[in-house]
Length: 377
Image (cartoon, rainbow, N blue to C red; front, side):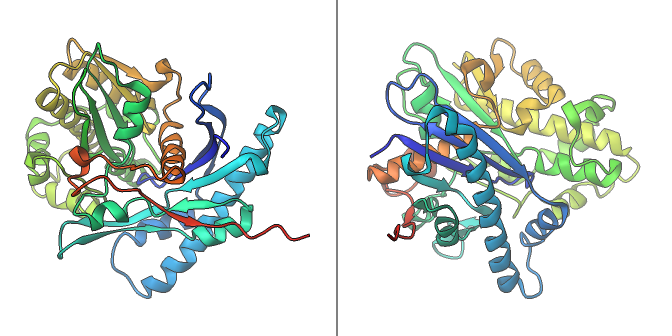
């Protein structure tokens, strides 16, 4: 089995697809050998966002969206192979693609077992690329009574756990999640709450820009204490782990309800308050669950938000707050690399979940294999 795996991730931020070719051999000096991304077109992004809520003819629309997503995934794969060609990494050298899919509903441990739904067509992706595809990483954990999320703490631990120092890894995508890596202790992790999803929504609505570049708009406003206190009253923030969340909860309707009575607050101050919400809830979770942490590594799009990183550092005196770039892995490559790693775990029939993180009944091999078509003479 080759140690080369492709990881593809399209997260709750809905900004597009990130992909990597990862060298997962134990002596690999560089984990990521190629990286590429493709943004979602505006119409496709709008359709994916709409599919997060009940709507007309949604089963048909979801199937078409899954096919379209497979096409985007395939283009990212081809770009990765082009980039890797000078390194003599060819299509036949790739053991498998780990394709996460696009989460549109996440309801674990409710309605009985609950469910999690990622739009994807891994069979079509295997057909388009000629490479085996491993997908459906979350459902085995949910079936075992777990949250199905987050799945990245095991990967974070493999990369950055240190027997001599407690640290944490904070991924700020559309939703923020934290991996707690105590020195010599049990790895834990959970979703903290909203990350960029509400920030991006509010910025798009009021500035017609897809995101708040470096957090500059938020930095020009003032967080409103009363509004911030209202936002932090959501019961989710008081829940004990294991826990996970998504756009099912933290969406524009939720925000509109929180803003009732705060209609006079300037839009820029709402953005500042939402930025403070993300920073303070993540910092609170770290202080509460791993007070010995000396370092916080931040990945995802939030690591590029200068204002958010500044507020995290202010909220965590004595903790070194760094982008994962400082530890050799650019922040926008971490999640894609994690799903390459999870694809390898499946190929080796090794459990990919952590019971202490998801609350599942036990370790489970995560994923399902979709074989590439045979190479005909």
